[in-house]
Image (cartoon, rainbow over all chains, first blue to last red; front, side):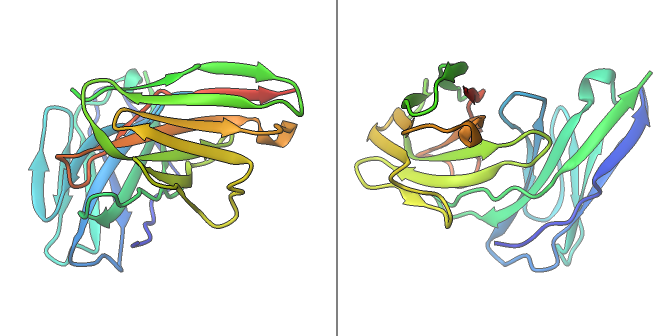
Length: 111
Length: 116
């Protein structure tokens, strides 16, 4: 599975846009890019998934350049409740493939 | 949406005893479930892959005789920590992969195990 590299931590203020970039230089053709959010003592929660270009849902956008060697999770107008750990995962779209978590990015949002 | 539950949410047990943790997919069938453990301030570590009706596949370094996994139905997988020791104290999280999905997995809320 492709290894991912993310910043260990990021700080932001309420109302700002936050962009978390993930590097995955060895991504394979069949790999999708998925982001999860985790609050303390809770299981991870799916945020967004994409294969290429741009994907947007009600909570975030995911930007993937043409070479797919990196991706950027964009959180618009963050609030205090967005303080969490964000994981970027890259893996095959084959059913039954486990998700391998990297270290993640701890986002701290202040007022 | 797809919901995965875990029971219990927290448990305290004495050294040498066994503890069973249940993972259920409430509104979908899951051929495959995964078990992770997470120590404080660390990321999730995959322990094993559980397939309904077959033996679990354990990751390197995970003792299969200590962490017994049973996936008896398409909605239930159990993890039994046998002869628990204080170093087994951790946050155990399961995830389930719906049959219809290719990649998106749904995670349970986790079980906090404390071994005294």
